[in-house]
Image: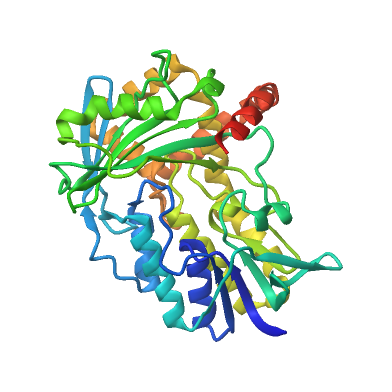
Length: 416
């Protein structure tokens, strides 16, 4: 029976980050992954400045990927372009197809000394209420810490109770890779007034992310807070959105079948004795924009660093860190997700957001969480203040969550 210091289930951005940082600290690391060549996970492929900053910290060279200088936002007849801001994070982003990106971060972990174990199903081993290792078939690898990085709703996450908080907002999204005559555009494009099957506004957005190789990533996403969410048809929405932007982007036909996925944004039990969940498995997905790569990389690093400090207290220290550094932002964003489920209010807020370049820059800072907690900024003040004001409505939102639980559960089952 092999014994390691850290066993990581899943070698996406979160797992590879955890494995890399743990191995660099001198830990013996076993990394369990189904695909050793990188996963073509359904994703928008966008790397925000926050993600770029974490990749630089990790030492990952992303120069092979298409650089993005800013964001183009559309809402109704209004359109604004904003550049990534100068400040706490690099003023650049990128579009990185996930199969290539995951292979790159996996190789970083292997170069650091993590040992890769291919598997079909890897399960946590529980003994007297504590996770003590990982089992693949009949083989068990004991570990002082097990990091669950296998994604939202994965068997390992479910086994440990890292499941979506009942009634909390979640997203559904679908994307396609499509040939485009503007694949070298240096702006990501987002449409904030996407319409559902009944012509009503959907609390979500459509996007076109240029990959720089003749291909763009086109997709749409919606939040579970919309009133007719259970009737939502993502394929129909994607077809409609592609028709809407097809001429402007010179779109062809999708190169493969579109892929859809779910985005839980609030998860129970993110850690316990002997284990922590990171990335999507911990519900670390930004409710404002559905982005999670930056939080995957950061949470993997945090888990490894806390293990290096004190293996015996890592799960409690990890929970405390998430509660302090991440939960306030995510709580405010989840409240906002419920608010924008009201179309008239959504239109009003979008009118304010796109009214000037200054307000659009503030919105970009908040939505992409480009806020440095160590330095006071207007975006940070507005986010904190908005969170306090919206918290007054928590009892109303809670009742709304409870009343919509049955429809949401049905939608989850239908999307599997």
